[in-house]
Image 1 (spheres, rainbow, N blue to C red):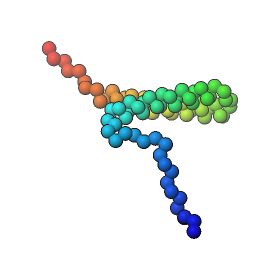
Image 2: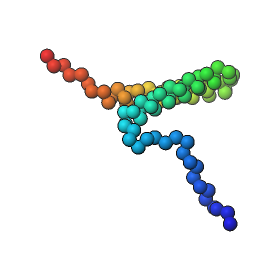
Image 3: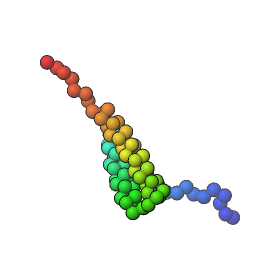
Image 4: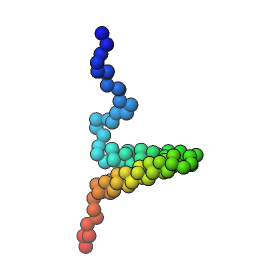
Length: 83
């Protein structure tokens, strides 16, 4: 008898249970930087709409990285002006 529902796929990447929020956001930013580089380098060898799609992907990834970097900035304590 065959199964109607297949087993779920095993995760390729698992985050450590004790990974802090700050470290997770920093890792996200780093991964997005690498993804932007991959998309940009891939676009170099393409033409037409395929190149446009790769460049758009790089741009969207870069936007996400900018937001991740901003989230990290928000976690930094703001300096206080103590005379």
